[in-house]
Amino acid sequence: MSLPKACIFDLDGVIVDTVPAHYVAWKAMADELNIPFSEEDNEHLKGLSRTESMLKILELGNVTKSENEIADYTTRKNNIYVEIISKMTPQDILPGVLDFIQQLKDNGIATAIGSSSKNTPTILKAVGLDTTFDAIVDGNQVTHSKPDPEVFLKGAAKLGIKPEECVVLEDAISGVEAAKRGGMKCVGVGDPSVLGAADVIVPDLTKMNLGILRNL
Image (cartoon, rainbow, N blue to C red; front, side, top):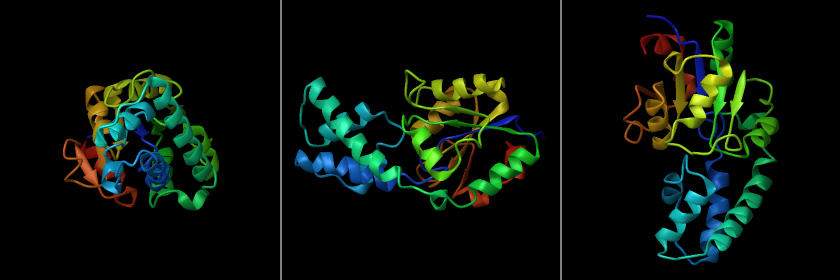
């Protein structure tokens, strides 16, 4: 069993935990609309675009808004979110991430970011990882958000590596589906009851190693 040629990482929830920042920002919008919005509701927005997320929140409250109003809410949500994430530091990198990336580099395995977030450059710069990866594909470069495989396929293309030789690391159901639809193996990072469709699941990257990659 051989190692893959590349690992493509989702950003939110795999490299850094931006879920609390998203929750604060989306809850501010939901509160304005008098729509109850819980941390569990926030979990269901993982991997979705801003517009899709806003539509989900409106659906929760059975509220209808025009396209312009939706655009206004998503812009203001993003302003709150960016203010929070721009204050992130290297301390916000999740456990095990740096060690695992170093293992990959030591073994000649390429690394990429494949994230739906348009704020990927801001986050990577804030935590000091902006020059760490061989390729970065984010929400500014894709037309279709996950579960469409576009973000991962573009990552593989940027690396010059076939999709079937890449492994994706994901914490969201939509991301796991995107990886599988792109013909890639997928490591789920997080809760096994949520990420059952992944090829293998680890609680976080402290439990990730080359042996797991070989077995894929």
